[in-house]
Structure formats: structure tokens, C-alpha cells
Image (cartoon, rainbow, N blue to C red; front, side, top):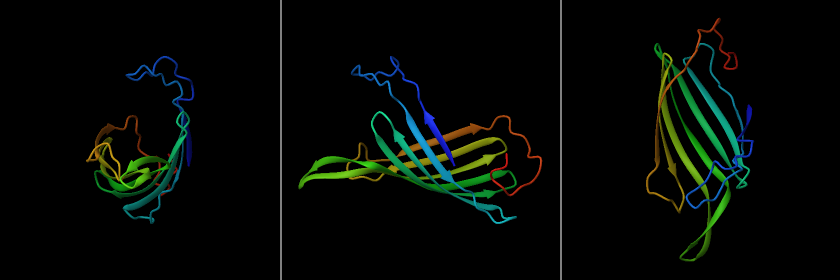
Length: 162
């Protein structure tokens, strides 16, 4: 479980949009909880998790529900999963029969591989709403490197041990 408060200080004078409107409150609060499950000696593990996000300036909030699967390999680890994001705040719009409302929701499958200290991943987010700004989804490719990783002093089947 964890809690994060991002951008807690005011940001006067640095966040302007094209119309000259200044954003000075970028505070975002995140709370999440999850756990990794695996059988002792198994190469497979499963990680369900949930996250709540609140943006202070716009008073909007959303919730993410996630499921992730890991498989230990000789070279590292492969993993994948699915994430579902749902806004807890709705937006109203005019349609042919009057006024309707919808809540933002995303479906995001992802896959990745950890090879030694390198990380490669692909994510696709699809917005599943009646009113969308585009007809496709959002693609993300991650190329990373884990710095300063050391070999564990002992083998433990406990994900909380560092």
C-alpha cells in the first residue's frame, strides 16, 4: 500500500496554456494497494491492485483496477496484464434525444520483459466512451534500465523484501 501527494507546492508563473490561463494548483493525490501472490517454487506470480487518484484543482477523481501476471525466465521476467480506469465524475453532453452523461473509462492491456537490468514494454490504452476525441487508442513503448540493482543476499518468496 502507498500514498503519494504530487505537486504539493503552488506553481505560480510556470504553467500557462495557449490562452494565457495560469494553473497554480497541480496537486494530485494517489493511494494504491496491491499484493503479489505465488506458490512457493512456482515461476508464475499474480498481482491484483487498485489505485485511487484525486486532482485538487478540478476536484476530479478516478479509480484503477489492475491485474498483472509475471513469469520468471532464465534471462529475467516476462509480464503482462490489464488495467481498467473509471472516472468517478461524469460529463454531460447533448445527443439527439436530449442530454446524456458519461464517465471516462479506459481499458489498457500491457506486456513487457525484464532482461537483465533492461526493461521493454508496450501499452495500448483504449477509451471506451460514447464521446471520444479520437477514434483510436494511445500507444506507449517503454525502454528502460534499472540502475544500481544488486543481487539479493538471500532467496525469498516474499515480494516486500528489498
